[in-house]
Amino acid sequence: MKVGFVSLGCSKNLVDTEMMIGLFKKNKYEIVNDPSQAEIIVINTCGFIEPAKEEAINTILEMAKYKEENCKYLIVTGCLVERYKDDLIKAIPEVDLFIKFSEYDSIWEQIDNLINSQTKEGKLEFLDRVISTGKNYAYIRIAEGCNNFCTFCAIPYIRGRFTSRKIEDIIEEAKKLAKEGYKELIVIAQDTTKYGVDIYGKPKLAELLHELSKIEGIEWIRFLYAYPETITDELIEEVKNNNKICKYFDIPMQHISDNILKKMNRKSTGESIRKLIVKLRENIPGVVIRSTLMVGFPGETEEDFNEMYEFVKWAKLDKLGCFTYSKEEGTTAYKMENQVHPMTKKRRYNKIMSLQQKISEENMKNHLGKTLKVLVEGNGIGRTYMDVPDIDGVTYIKGKCELNSFVECKITDIKEYDLIGEVIQ
Image (tube, rainbow, N blue to C red; front, side, top):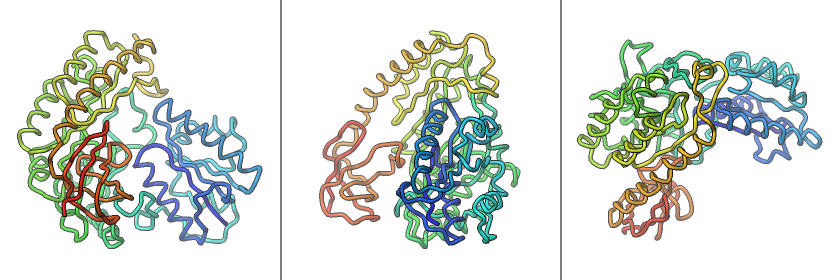
């Protein structure tokens, strides 16, 4: 039978989808990209915040239309199902099978019971997953879950407690990816900087990155979601001195006001975040700092917001994403008083992003005339160390270049969040 997949949400969810594809492939199913050809459609959902939930519901209903044609079975998995399985069963009877994230240990048994397949290869395996991100880069997930319990976040309740993978298992997977020709590894977890604490008794991210850098064929390594309070001197030194590790820190700060940080159950303070930014820039030449901030958290006053606005003006972060607070059932913040009006949240969001747009334009101009290493991903398109796929910008390349190769480009122009460069022969 032919199987099609839709993966929603974050890169960590995408890794689950890639393992599902590998599981179906191992069991001799044909994988197709066109849902109109699929006899089975699998949707891996996100259920983190309201817009993600809406996208998931709309996608399920859209895919359900194919049951009027070729599709025989519609299967929905992931975080939305973890949170709302019973409600979904009642609301969307077109779906043949809902599988929670916590039920993945029995995923093939459930699918087998639905489709009456005789195969027994039923476990999700990292080494069997089918990479869906092209030939240049692959995500490598080093841990699952989260122990931080930020008051606005449902992830610990959806994905469970923080659980690291063993270093040797991660290295084995990375070596396999290198043999398959992948040039860049993107190390991911909900909180990469806490990697190893649960099984080794101390943070092991720096050591893991060092071991990954020894693998032949891997030329770039980057890690995402480094919490500010757990960025160690050892990690900073490893990033500084290891040429394979991209000088790029994605640090989810969320806010700068101590008042709001405390209500969020964040472990950082405004002062510690400011000191960290200075420290990174002093120790790592050319470091790129990306962050996310949240506006409209319950109890956020104009004074709190103005402190964050002035911080953005001071920090001049290379990359910045901003989100409005989403009231999520099951979280501590859901019941907090002084919920901020939606129009106020929107106004604050627009003000932050308008400021950051000007800052980004000035930051981009600083690259004019520089020569940067670019990984070629398509016809005349690539990325520098400063850009994460599908999140940041790209580099438009003028001159001869081969797919999945590195070229040196002199930056001649900018286009909003993108660079334009000429290949140096």
